[in-house]
Image 1 (cartoon, rainbow, N blue to C red):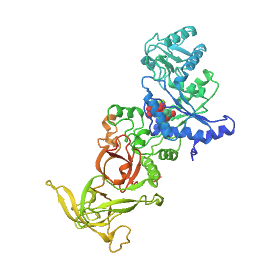
Image 2 (tube, rainbow, N blue to C red):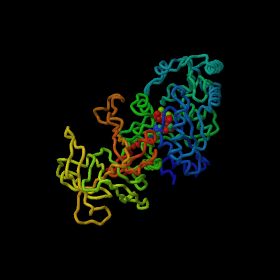
Image 3 (cartoon, rainbow, N blue to C red):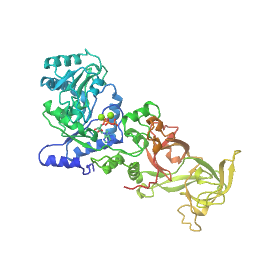
Image 4 (tube, protein in one colour):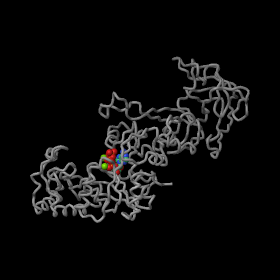
Length: 548
Ligand code: ATP
Ligand code: MG
Ligand code: MG
C-alpha cells in the first residue's frame, strides 16, 4: 500500500541499490522547528518516508534547530504529531543540535587545514564584497589569518567573548567562483540566544549549509532530498562532506517544491497570519498547514494519495487546488454517513399533519454504499428547510418550493406550499404546507412526479449546529498581485452559519466526518465543538468540475 510512485529519485535509488553504491537507503525529513508543517512539507514527508519504506530502508526525523531565535518546542511537538498523523514512523528522532560538539570539532579541523578563518567583516561588508554573478568578490582582509590566530579567535567566539555579528567563521574557498555559495560562505555565526534544547551552552551556531551535510553524514543518510532552490548549494554540500573528512558520503538530490493555486505555501507568511490574529492559530481550518487541513477535515489518506498523484519532478509547477479537493471527496465518498443539515433554516409547518405526532422514517446511510445500512429519522408537523429552497417569485427553471408548487422532501413525502408568513419587515419567516400521505418515500407511489427534491430536518428534535464555510485566505486577482501580503487578505474567508442537524447527530464527536445532503463534506471541529454545541467545518463542497 505504501509504495512510492515512480520518479527520478526512486530511479536513482533503484540504481544505487542494484550497483551496490548503497546497501540500504536512508533518508531524513529535516524540518526547522520555526513553524507548523504545511501541505508542501507533506510532499517531502511522503517522498522521504515512502521511498525508504519501499526498499526496507530507514528514515529519520531530524530537526534542523540551528537558529534559536526562531525556534521553539511548541513547533517540535506539532511537527512530530503531524508526521505521525500522516501515517509515518521515523526510525530515529534527531536534532541538529545533537551534533553541535562534533560540528565544532570539524570546524576546528577545517581551520587547522587552512580551510576556514575567522572574519571580522560585518554582514553588510560581507554582502558588499561578495561580488555579483559577473564580478568576482573581494577577499576579506582577515582571510589570511594564521591557523593559530583562527583557532584562538574561534575558541573565544565559542566562549562568548564577542557580541552578535562581531565575527563569523567562514570557509576559505574561492571568492571568484561562479558559484556564489563558494565565495567564502559563513559556517558559524554568533547568537547570544537561549536555545530550546541546548539552553545557554552555545553562543555560536552553525549555518544550514554547514550543519545539514554533517547531520546527513553523521546519520548515514544516503539520499538527502531537498527542494530545487538548494541545487546551487550542492557543490558546497559536497565540499563540506569532503573537507570535514566525513566517513559517510550522502548525496543531495533536488526536486520541485509543491505549489498549489490560491494557497499560501510559506511558513513566514503563515506565521504572520497567526501573529496578526487573522486566523485562529496555526490549525485554523483555512490554513494549508497539516494541522489546519486535519481540523478542516482532510484525512491522512487523502493527503498521501494527493502527494502520490502530483509526483516528484524537477520542473516547478502549480497544482490546481481542485486536485486536493478531488482526493478528499474520493476518500470520504463511501465512508461517510450522508445525513441532512439545514444551514440557513426556514420553518415549515405541515398543516394537515396530525399535531403531536412524530413518525420514524427509514433513510439510507450512504446511497453509494449499501453496507452502511439505514437509520430512522423523525418526521412531524414542523420541519426546517433551507431558505434557499424557497422563492416567492421564482424564475422559470426553479423547481424547489414556491407558492402552489410541490416538491419531494428527501426520505419523506411530497409537500406543497400553501401559504407564506412574513414578519413586519416583509421577511419570509415561515411556510405553511400540506403533505400527501400517499407519497411516502419507499412506498412505490407513482401517481405524479415532482421536479425538485429538497432536504429538511424535523424541528422539535433537531440539534442546533454551527456551520463554518471557507474561502481562500487571499484574494487572488491580478489587480492585487503587487500589494503587500497583508493587504491581499480575503475578508470573506470565513462564513459562520447557525442551523440544525438531524437529532441522531447529537453524539457526533470531534473529527467525525459526514456528508450533508447537497452541502458537501463536513468535519466536527475538535476545538469549538462541545457537549452543548456542535460546530462543523466544511471540508469541501460536493461538486467539482475537475477530475485528474
Ligand atoms: P518554508 O519555505 O515554508 O519556510 P522551509 O523549506 O524553510 O519551508 P523546512 O522546515 O526547512 O521549511 O522544510 C523541511 C523540508 O520540507 C525541506 O526538505 C524542504 O525542502 C521541504 N519543503 C518545504 N516546503 C516544501 C514544498 N512547498 N514542497 C515540497 N517540499 C517542501
Ligand atoms: Mg529550511
Ligand atoms: Mg524556511
